[in-house]
Amino acid sequence: MNESSAARRKPFRRLLLTGAAGNLGRQLRGALADWADIVHATDIVPPGAAAAHEETSVVDLADREAVMHMVEGVDAIVHLGGISIDAPFDDLLEANFRGTYNLYEAARKHGVKRIVFASSNHAIGFHPVTEVLDADSPHRPDSLYGVSKCFGESLSRYYYDRFGIETVCVRIGSSFEEPKNPRMLVTYLSYRDFIELVRCSLFTNRVGHVVVYGASDNPVKWWDNTKAGFLGFRPRDSSVQFAERFPVTAPTAERDDPAQRFQGGAFVLGEPLARDR
Ligand code: NAI
Ligand code: 15L
Image 1 (tube, helix red, strand yellow):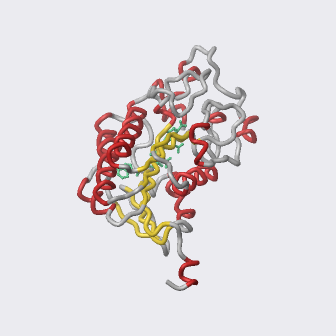
Image 2: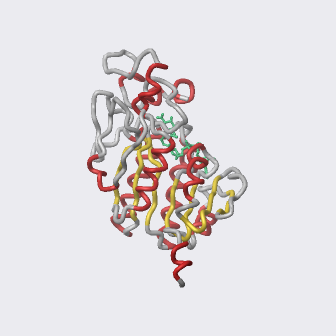
Image 3: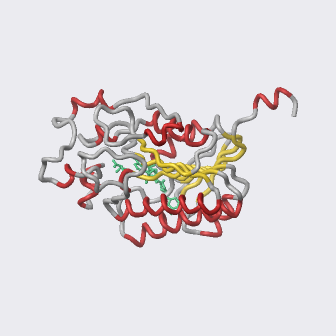
């Protein structure tokens, strides 16, 4: 390789992005252009036109053979695909449980070294809002969706301990354009901070198996990332600029409403669509 081609080389040759048609997948695709020669952007629905550095595919993560084929030759995976709210068990079983298993099994077969797994705050959503959690706080899922994320975290732990595949489990708070309610003043993760957290998760030299919370530098904090400090994630944004939009600034433990008392908000009542979105 001559000097100019070495200078042009990107850190990864081939990255796989699942959930590429979704809210966060669409945000991330631009950034991935600088990080890999080829980004394979996949989803169960068409992920849109492929950019110059992209390949796209429509694949159901529950389709083991298709996933096995898709993972061949991949250096690292950003796994955002799956059902992203509470749903009937049979739906979660296919997309989140079977889909995540298929991906890890394909990663093992094809020697993928690292996966960034989009976990969720709903893996710990039944902890009260008065607690500050860290990476070692026990799972307390607030929904079957949350249980599916606990499964992904445990599965990835097993694939690290048994096969050495590294995973960063990113327990994402609420990553949207803006907070949509008082709870999201605490759980807000700006798109810019989300992209930075994925960058840290992909580029830190050795990560082993680690849990990191995905929140911006918001005034009220439920999550302590000290144990994942080696990732070097420093959020640059904050929900503070949105605070005056909401009459109450954050949920508190005194309220009768379980959606106020627990970190998972309305997910603890099985109402994510009605109240959180
Ligand atoms: P989203 O729902 O917009 O995107 C998820 C994508 O996965 C969709 O495009 C969907 O078509 C695809 N998908 C669903 N079932 C699939 C299957 N069987 N096979 C292949 N693809 C499938 O969700 P969003 O906001 O982009 O979130 C991305 C990931 O981050 C999800 O795993 C979600 O659980 C997680 N997360 C997101 C949070 C947020 O605030 N945006 C908070 C916590 C976790
Ligand atoms: C999630 O896990 C969901 O994917 C997202 O849609 C939001 O509901 C988010 O959690 C949240 O807790 O705000």
